[in-house]
Length: 326
Ligand code: FES
Picture 1 (cartoon, rainbow, N blue to C red):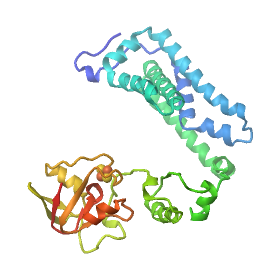
Picture 2 (cartoon, rainbow, N blue to C red; picture 1 turned 180 degrees about the horizontal axis):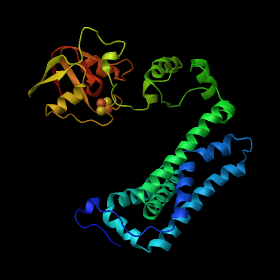
Picture 3 (cartoon, rainbow, N blue to C red; picture 1 turned 90 degrees about the vertical axis):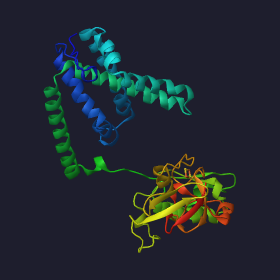
């Protein structure tokens, strides 16, 4: 093995490239499988069958085994020592992912994904060790170009290949639909995942069924990207308008209207505890002693917090100069 000694972080493997034909085939197969072309054909083509669908997985496993055998046959264990020595973060990531099976809530799924992560890493190593970069780029460009052409042709002449045949319920998630799907919602916890508009519509529907707010959880996406485009935002206040935030018994910082208070406080060196940074966990709550803040609709603040002036600073925005208590 010949490696460049000047900068280990940039060291590249320079063994003579071997078995380029097999590696080229593996590269093409990886692109076909990775772009879901094979899976689409297995599921959606006129020849779709359970056997074909299983074969897609079998093909992945065969490719992993071939890549491992190819690496050992052409490089001995040099590829392994090189990877451990020069790509340690990659090795730790792959090993950590496999090890996470131990505490996974769905060990079966984690094992399945770990196998694919390890397998595709081996594939990448095999292709990288066996083919020069120019060949990889040329083959990838040609394969992906043909795939794009095939996609356009199938959209024109065989559109059924790209159509989902979803047969479940569709339409607005109303109280009736929820009752139909979930039955009597006693002792049921609801988990919502979707855009804000969906939350705005669904939350009242679920609450109408008598479900307490604590039993309705939401996917966390962080604070809104642009709070000033929120429908309730007062248009006269500009994103960059600076307000002063004085922390009772502490320092005073300035905070732009369009940034979450939590972020402005942290930038000013005041760091309240936080976990979700999406308005859900209450960890970052602060008390507003004077001044007004904007909170997007649907921010789940407890009744008692609301009553005593507490807000979740990760999704609260100053509309006036504030005095706060941490
Ligand atoms: S960090 Fe969770 S509500 Fe703010």
